[in-house]
Length: 398
Image 1 (cartoon, helix red, strand yellow):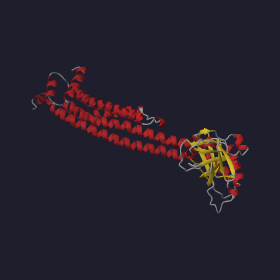
Image 2 (cartoon, rainbow, N blue to C red):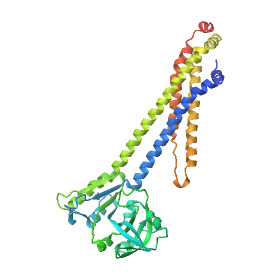
Image 3 (cartoon, rainbow, N blue to C red):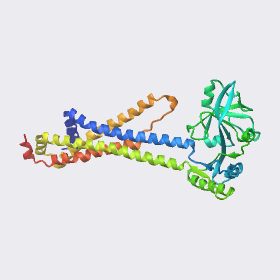
Image 4 (tube, rainbow, N blue to C red):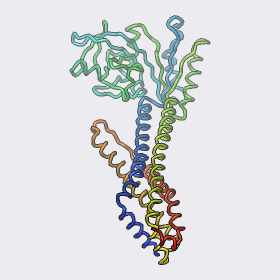
């Protein structure tokens, strides 16, 4: 029998048993869709988590003095000289310092509000990835002249329900002009010096306001991911060399968190892929069972085909072809369903969130390959059984 005829016979056999073939195909369809969707969700989750961490600053190294208020002295605090020294470290491209004061009240048009006053140095906007919603950030002149200017958070600006740029706010005996409204690129939910009610002022003003001339936190940005650990070590050595022996400073970075996110995403993907593969294996068992029943039902047909000249290899090829057709078509339907779910989800998500759901081409190829391989593997036993039937015995089968 010619190969084209084998294809036609296999296709006719599937069309003659549409319901049986469709039910067998259903498991493969679900398993394939699961593989594509699992990889898609995994990639999307990993990208989101990594983007959040990177937006805060994966190349960021931060240092602070954790000493208690009883044992600490001003000489142990991180100074502006430490900041200047950090800026000239070999692999540091930007450095900034910050000191925050909580439980401070501001007054705007007679309305009082409790805020956190945050003194910042040059480079703070770049270091912390702050987005200026309205107005501008401090320029060099503001910093050098200790200008009585400030920026407020977007959340704080919304509470006053008016355009805050250009407004005058009072903090104690000082009056500040609001020159900008900002927000964090990625919200830290008050886990950093930035809170929902933060007011940024030039650091030099804090000395005039409360006599503060030291930094609560020192930030340094490395020039590459590879040099983050090196900058962390250099910053530690630099701080210890500038202060008295025995004083310990906490110097950390976000590289460990980023690596942990990668590992968690990888483990989650592996677990979900394992579940999807189990679904496909169960589907493969279903294909094998259906094909074994089919061989029994079509014993006389097999005997007749052998009697008119079909050899063992052609019978084997026909039944393997039927199994691969079921798994292959099921895989294609599963992929189409997964892609359709992705397209529908993107349409339902509001455009302002700017969410893109990535479909991995590799996941489609792997899902198609695994599904067809499952059909081929589990279809071999019934196909081999059919090919070994003797024509005389098969023709006498009832």
